[in-house]
Length: 96
Image (cartoon, rainbow, N blue to C red; front, side, top):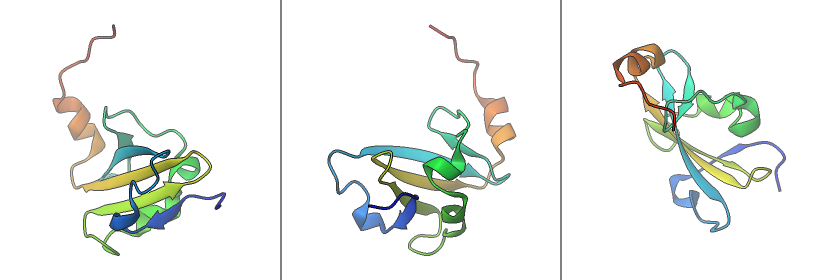
């Protein structure tokens, strides 16, 4: 078991049923956010900054990362837009 997150192939993504599958977006201004456009606070602890240099290794616009400590597989999709542009265009969400 690795203590640090590591890059996996697209085929390995989701191969462990007990691991949560999480999709993230990596924006052009180097911001990492989840599907709700919430910022990922602990990038190093979740996916590791180093993994964000692996776009193009398996696929041009995505990187897959496994975090054994958190029991998570991450799909990180490259988004050429900036995070600030994406947040500006979203309708305000009401807190329930």
